[in-house]
Length: 226
Image (cartoon, rainbow, N blue to C red; front, top):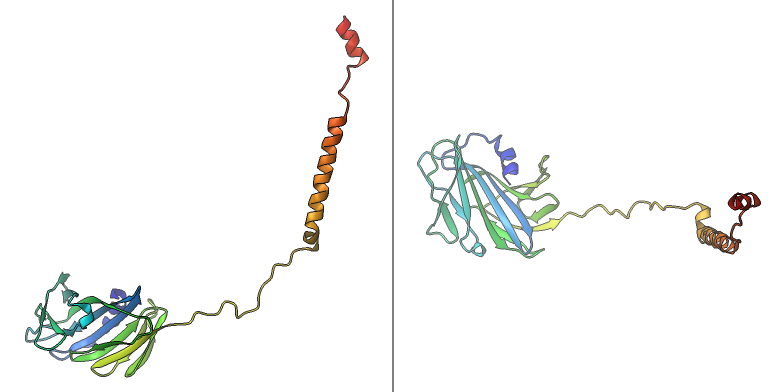
């Protein structure tokens, strides 16, 4: 997510006070659950705190990091607001650009729709599917794939979304002509060749076994007698 986010954030335009310039939501399903990573690039002039929607299925468990302009990421606490399922990052967003990353996990069933809400004033909102997956739903504008990560990016209009994640179909490896290995004709009679070789070897062993033991020559006998 961080690599994808920075690619999109580098060209972020100047934005009005209390607004979010870019808001990215990455959905990564797997193993009966889905990790949702959200990144905000925002600024404000009144020290406000960033509100965000957290689904009930997350059980209030969310990790948040805030990075001020030219600073380092720090862990940030969250607090519940008076609005249902809306929390706020408990770090004042100071003038200038501040990046806020949050991550949470929800149960997920393959093929089921996933719903979320946008509670910030976003100049641009993006839904992102990881490489190999696409999103289907209303108010989505397919922006194509990010060249480096191959993540699929969709612009979102409106303050809510309901999407279904679908795995892209892999190319059918059996669609092309099959390549068959054709052995030379001799391989069709390999068993006969092996049988003949074994027979010759057996015959040689039999003849060697039946051969009479070598006898001493006359010259050897005479030398022995001396």
